[in-house]
Each structure stands twice: as C-alpha cells, then as structure tokens.
Image (cartoon, rainbow, N blue to C red; front, side):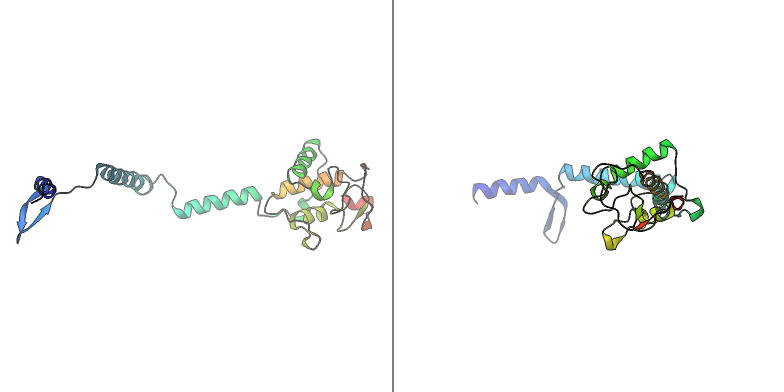
Length: 196
C-alpha cells in the first residue's frame, strides 16, 4: 500500500462512526463551521420574523402594507380630483412662488421659456392669445392631462392637484408681463374676464 493511501486510510479511521451495516461503514464528515453558523443564523432570523409578524402582530401583513402604500400614493397625487368649483386661481405670494418653483422643477421652461415667453416648441404664456382656453379650469386641465398631439406632457402622475393648481395660477399670473424675446401670439384672444 502506498504511503498516500495509508495516510488517507488513517484519516478515514479518525472519522469512522461506530455503526457498521453489512460491512458498510459511515464516515462522520460534518459540514464546515461557517455553513453551520449561517444555518443557525437563518433559524434564529426565522424565529424573530415569525414572532414579529405572527405572534406579536407588530408587522404589517401584505394586505395592510398594500393598503398603506396605496394610501400614501393617493395622498401624494391626490387621486380624488378637485371639482370645477374648487378651482380658483391663487393670488397670494406664497402660492405663486411655489407655482414658479414647480414651473422650474418640472422644466416647463424647456418649452415655454424661463419667463413664459415661449420658444420654438411651446406657445407664449404672457400674451392675451391662448390655444386651449385661458381660465384656471382650462389651464389646470392642460397641465394635468397634457396635449399629446402638440407634445405637451401630462403631469397628473407627477404632481398633486394642489400643485397643478398652483402652477396654473403662476402661469395665469404671467399674462401681461411682457418678457424680452416673446414669441408671436397664437390662438384666440382671451377676454380679461375669462381668466378667473
């Protein structure tokens, strides 16, 4: 018997278990310690998880988690739409400042210019000519639902109704501001009384 086989046989003898079945002997070859540690950690974690969710009832079930996430989404985007009677143009400084901030954050200037003067893509928002109506309800609807045929993106999935109302109020506040490099008028002339 070669020296190598002899060493292997001696190592096997160290791991042989006591029982013998029809001449077949079994080696005691335990898994590595790191696998056993991982196994015990998994068992411990499952006990903590079960206690937290099932025995102590501290965690949310899938249905509760879904309801919570849906409520957060509805709150964020105010899925319950404002009625036409709730739509009024804000005139207070705080709302118009927030509307201007939203106008900037949503990159409205890419199509309508920094001051609403319009450009090659979007119409001038500062003159008395309007393409799709000039009252708060019309402007609100355009911002919310967009005008896909003209490339106007709908913002209903990105802004709440209140934020759309504020940016619409800001857009209406731009009328008559006469910025430099204003685009030529487009659409129908809007009567002053139509903007409320």
